[in-house]
Image (cartoon, rainbow, N blue to C red):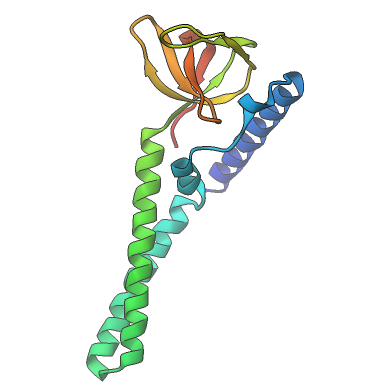
Amino acid sequence: PALAEDLAHNLGVARDQLAEASRRRHRILHIFDESPELGVAVARAAPQSALAIGTIFAAWLALMAGIGAHRRRDRRLAVVAAAALLLHLASAGWLWQARTTLADAHYAVLVDGDTPLDACSGVGEPIDLPEGLEVRRLVTRPDGRVEIRLPNGRRGCVPAAALYDVPSA
């Protein structure tokens, strides 16, 4: 577990350094807005292991308080049991959302400098994307190009050779 945390931390530092180098090298700042999609931000807001532990603890607390409230006919324990059950449902829902969102999201990093982001269909002026930019990989098109989504929501196509797929956690 400690090694996995170190690796995750180092990967985050490396991504931050690559993004910072890209920002310094390129002056088109609106492309490099680092705000992720809302669903992804919520999914990454808490570690899944902490959510799983919270879900299990809340279920145990709800069960114990519910049994105590039933045996003693105590309203306060019934309120604690209801609150713990609500906490259990909320943490279980958050955990489910995080797992499904992150399982459906496929990310890649641009490995070629000044990769052109072209319109996938129609006409549009290409924008050069810097090496090291993390993007969401959407679909591989029949012509071999990959449709991607930038962190700011803009979509386009890049050559498949310009991407390195980030392994899913």
